[in-house]
Image (cartoon, rainbow, N blue to C red):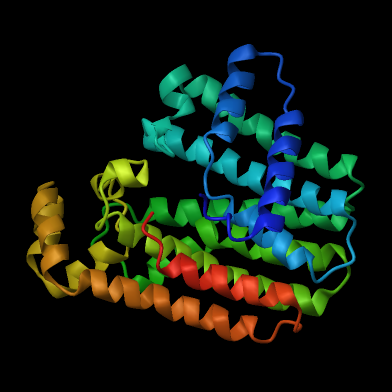
Length: 314
């Protein structure tokens, strides 16, 4: 049973997305080809294409365009993950070895670069107009600015929750926002596209906050990635920032690389509860905006999935 089992129609569409992504990859270098296909096969939640497909139910777009748009969103997301793993020198992703760990950073960079090109080629093949291409460029710019903003604040114990929220709005939430908005936008319903964008942005922020929350409540085997890795690299997520405000020892412990003590303080203070409450706050905002969507059957699915993300364990 998967996250999408209760939604058989959506599950079937996501299988079509998987097929389209796989058949879109034609790399001359066998290692790069295999690396990309293996990452596609390793799974992932497929949340971004799922939200795109759900919001496409409010449109008159042809089925092939819906699948193509969903595929480009997931391919763009995958490209950013590959590059992130190179920068972070990560050894695992989704519970399996990363491309950079298996084949080296050179192959990983080429794989990520190829996926960016494949995104635009797929859009052209399915006659998705230049306005959609510009949307992708804008999304990529916001993603990069979010990553750069995070990099600028590495090892900075003076940063605020507001700084953190601004950065995850770009590096994570922007793709959720695009996923929700792009189908209404392509259909010419710009008012609905703006509402969908705002919904996706709040969902994406809540998702990243919960991801950071789970770093301190689940083990690396459950998450499929090493826990505490961000903290060791000087990236301070919400639990760390709340702990910094709760206990004056945290800043010195981070400086001394005493991460075990920081972890214990996070557990002992209200840092995790405040992190969860922050995620709930953004989820609540998203749900209020979802109430403004047209009253069709898919609306209840969007609401239910958004609520489930707040309670997920991985």
